[in-house]
Amino acid sequence: MKLYEFKAAPNPRRVRVYLAEKNFSIPCEQVNLFKGEHKAPGFLAKNPFARVPVLELDDGRTLAESMAICRYIEELKPSPPLFGRNREEHAFVEMWQRSAEYELLFPIANAFRHGTEFGKGLESNQNTAWAETCRARALAAMKILDAELGGRQFVAGNEFTVADITTMVSIDFGAATGAVKVPDDMKHLKRWHGEVSARPSAKA
Ligand SMILES: N[C@@H](CCC(=O)N[C@@H](CS)C(=O)NCC(=O)O)C(=O)O
Image (cartoon, rainbow, N blue to C red):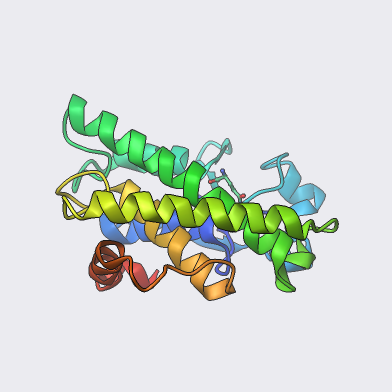
């Protein structure tokens, strides 16, 4: 197997953090998005959507989508379980992972792409009003997560899961790019962020 990824991008980091939690290593190849390498014919043959990460399987087939890649590895190495242990946990992890992706990661990514100087490299037609809308959506999602985390240790329950990975990577990307930052008064979200950031996998 081989993982095509880009160190500076948040979605590939989700897979890297996941692999670190699993203690599972896969050879990686960097695809530089700022140089447009994801739009070269060789890479488009692997993922016509021109996005990273992509996992190339041993038989040559390619699997795109961060969570599809993580699920594939989960079947290969079930322990420790990062998608939950039973029907109920699977469902709640799915809900919170998907909510983090849709309500946090996508708005933060768009606030970055449409509202920052660096984002111009990826978004030729920037729309700053859209960036502001996305920023407000991300802050609204953070407020909800802050309230949820007042009642439990991790995003989907009392175990660390892929829902924490997507949430942490989104928040870190928002902060690193200056697109959206967690407000200081969101104490539960900050407590949780401190804890997940202290895990060795957060360095991935
Ligand atoms: N849903 C996809 C999203 C992948 C994605 O958007 N990747 C970004 C990097 S974080 C990308 O490749 N962007 C290329 C571009 O915008 O041109 C996944 O999780 O795999």
